[in-house]
Image 1 (cartoon, protein in one colour):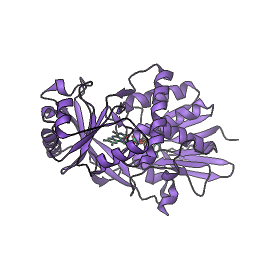
Image 2 (cartoon, protein in one colour):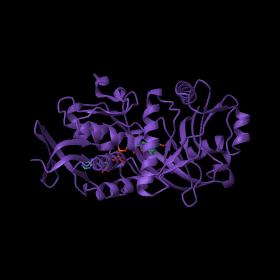
Image 3 (cartoon, helix red, strand yellow):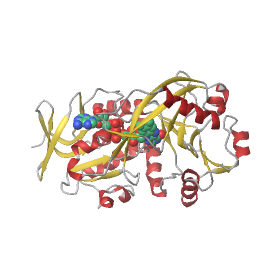
Image 4 (cartoon, rainbow, N blue to C red):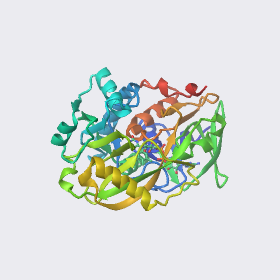
Length: 376
Ligand SMILES: Cc1cc2nc3c(=O)[nH]c(=O)nc-3n(C[C@H](O)[C@H](O)[C@H](O)COP(=O)(O)OP(=O)(O)OC[C@H]3O[C@@H](n4cnc5c(N)ncnc54)[C@H](O)[C@@H]3O)c2cc1C
């Protein structure tokens, strides 16, 4: 008899959410992660992640992100922590035909979401910290904001453990097998663990344990820099929304200024191709200067001194949509990967969906468009 109902491999942003939702359902969960809690080697560190509802990437994500909002609020209520989700409003800007603007408008209209459209001048009037180019427009979405990944991972892991999940850290899983009776994972020291089902949520390492599926994943090295604004009053929460913009220089995103943290910005649409084992974690001063120049153009009062810079990884699929599915040959193996730089906001909803799949249920959210079959 299997000792656990479900083994979750990888307890980062998505795996910790999965362990939590499975434990809430009374499942006997074993969670394994090769690093210690709070590590910064994966894709879920760096203070904040944007959450937004008028989803420019595809309107199909809207019901899923709405479920995530509900679950973030439930997590705050369950843990008594009110700092996991912060609503700031969100400003998506660029030319009207840019992906960010036209996609946000499409989702907003299709799903009847609240939003406003601002001209360049109106944007500066509403938010004096922003200076859009003359040919740009902005879509303002009041429900956008950010979630706090480090705090949420800690909260979900703690609650999962309180609900009976066994979470082990510093344990690398090197392989798995599946049979009708259940799954077995092997760890780097040769230990084996058995369970009824396996969930693989290994982020930028996903290609390793899922090699047999040959999912076309590409890992990008992403740099985020934190700045001390020159005019902090324009960039404080309350005066400054989260922002995402398509500019001739590329697509960028950023956050308001937080005391003791700074104002963070990063480039969204490109990164050096790497692997989770080989990534260069040093940041070249030229990478910071590049982000400073972009800030200087569109958020000029934010372009002060660099406080720190970090590297992180996007795990890209060719169509930049997630992969949430069962293994096609092993119904008791479930995977969540390829979050393509926009997955964290969905973490509780993805955790719920992976939990549903791992317990033999159909996903309660409309996520068929995220299945493996699209890769042929
Ligand atoms: C700079 C940056 C900015 C982003 N901004 C946003 C944003 O604003 N909004 C948004 O929604 N999303 C954003 N994302 C994307 C989002 O953060 C990721 O999609 C999400 O964090 C991925 O979580 P994960 O659990 O898949 O990966 P991770 O959090 O990296 O977790 C994977 C875990 O698996 C473990 N692991 C791997 N292999 C093994 C193994 N063999 N055995 C045991 N353990 C293993 C690792 O140690 C790690 O803890 C951003 C990403 C980056 C990098």
